[in-house]
Image 1 (cartoon, rainbow, N blue to C red):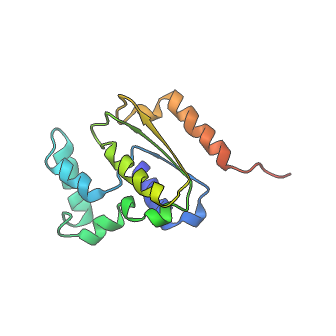
Image 2 (tube, one colour):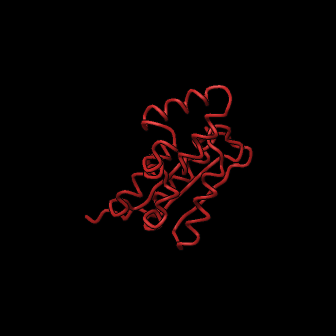
Length: 146
């Protein structure tokens, strides 16, 4: 979900008032390599990416680059962003979000980044974190004029 939200925002930044991204992948080639050499379900997920993309990052570098929001920071910097990631996420490393934030800072982007200490991949959907995300949304929505 967070990955798709960032890809959409990078492609059509003018359509959005803001984006919330939960535990996003920001570099598909990096994720592919981690999962390819990972454990449990990760190698199966890597094979799924390879099948969907038509090859691995060496075979299809443009495809992986196009679907990695880390390569679209200039466009993402035009959209207010709220990123939330658990620092113990074993599925998608928090480094994906940290690397994106590092680049967004260089572009003076409007963002909020919440790291959940000890949080895993599902932690951002806990009520206390969703409340913060909803409060952030409310700051981005203009009241309806009647």
